[in-house]
Amino acid sequence: MSPTFLMSTNKSIYNLGISLSGGGAKGFAHLGVLQALNEKGLYPDVISGTSAGAFAGVLYADGYTPEEIISFFKKKVFREFAEFTIPHGGFFKSDGFQSFLKKHLRARTFENLKVPLNVVATDIEHGESHTFKSGPLISAVIASCSVPIIFRPVEINKHYYVDGGLFKNFPVSTIRRDCEKIIGVNVSPITKSEFRSSIKYIAERSFHYMSGSNTLLDRNLCDYLIESSSLSQYSMFDLEHVQDIYQAGYNLTLDFFEDKKESLKKDFPHIAF
Image (cartoon, rainbow, N blue to C red):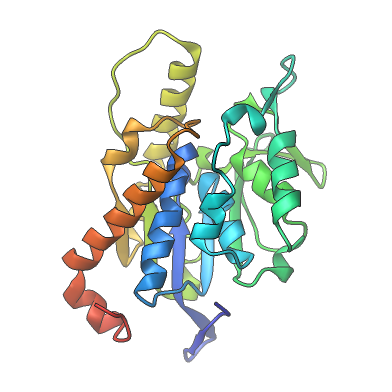
């Protein structure tokens, strides 16, 4: 899975980039998508990810197969990743996420990854989207996953970062000019959901609408778009249906290959149909 470069008249560019959206637990579908792509002979030369997309992307970029990654989450529950705390920037501390990444990631910097990775987070103080491409890895990924109010902001170089989905939940634009082709995977298109009177519901739906509304431009930047509203049945923090979500992503990609067969053959003649 080492990077493959194509030469242009101006500079080297990547052949295939894959952009992975945020979406909480729905991000496990990214792994099913990557598994199906790999089985067809498609491997990304660069990955961009926001929130759940960054979480899935970093483990894949570190050299794990999608099936190996999904095995890490068997019998996991949300409380293993988040420790409730008296509110001080967020209801939960992200120590569990940090411990998980320290345990499983072999790379400690972006430069040590087997596949180049872009991780998007939001500078909460300055109101800016920021793309991490180099330096320490774990803090950037945790920042990208830190849903505001739910998790505390992450301090990096005296700036405070939260979930990248506030401004760029689908980070296609971060790699667009560097890639010949981009496959975008959006696991969280805007959908409706029956009202429930709970703080969790209000917080989750609010973030869903906010992050979903900033994906429109990036959706149009994809050469190929894989997305489905069927994943909306799973909540942001659902770690009880990891395998089902993974399988849904896998099946969605098989349908995508069937639907886009002719154009995919032209762009990627080595694909095994």
